Image (cartoon, rainbow, N blue to C red; front, side, top):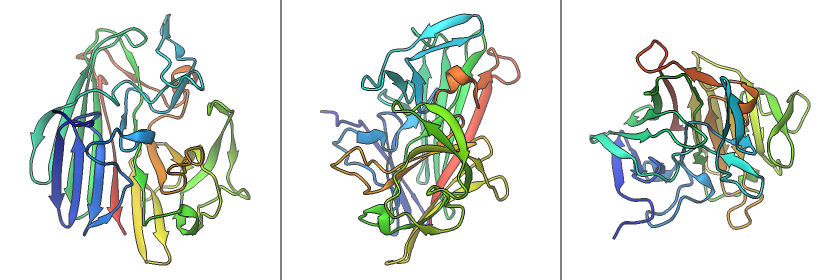
Length: 305
């Protein structure tokens, strides 16, 4: 019998422990000194709410699943029927293959075959590595097709510093611009966060702020942008950092999911925002196989504070 998320791959180092699953190459568990840093799921559960999943070859949503690239129109399957969008890529539910598994790291790969709506073959890789600096995740795509391919990546971890709700936690979000969206959660414009309820450029209490928004214009230190959560009652904290490839973050408090609303907060690294396959914003073009630019990597990570 095979569990809902498939084989489980555990790694540990410097007081950190993580479990990655065969299903989706998903980060199911991450803890430090026995304290959860992400709000994950049980080994026999389906990763509801996208938790811990990898979002490749695009994160977030594509309006109507329809886009044009080069001189061709493409139609993806609608994976979010309620909003009529193609959502979060093509590899969340597939079986990833382990390339190497050591005490402190695990690397997995999946060959995404050309298909209706995405007629390019890509080799996708993910490396999870634990050290004294916490968890580092590197997502890589290599184009195997003879034509250039559109690409973006993301991930969907839910951060936690306790049992929730998130209202009493403090947060730093180094983003100066918020993406505005419609009822389908597709971008309609941008606004500066200064003077709005979404300005967390300095640490402050989350309160009743509802998040299901993209953010950009990230302030960085040594090419990294860092979101930090802190529980004043316990002194516990967690941080998620992104490298320069990740110019967008999506935050989500799950207010539309009564069973687990505001229990944790998803902080989703993204190399492009929602609907990038249509707008071109942040979209990467992988060169044809064997040419310079046919491969791209992006890294992010989580550590205890």
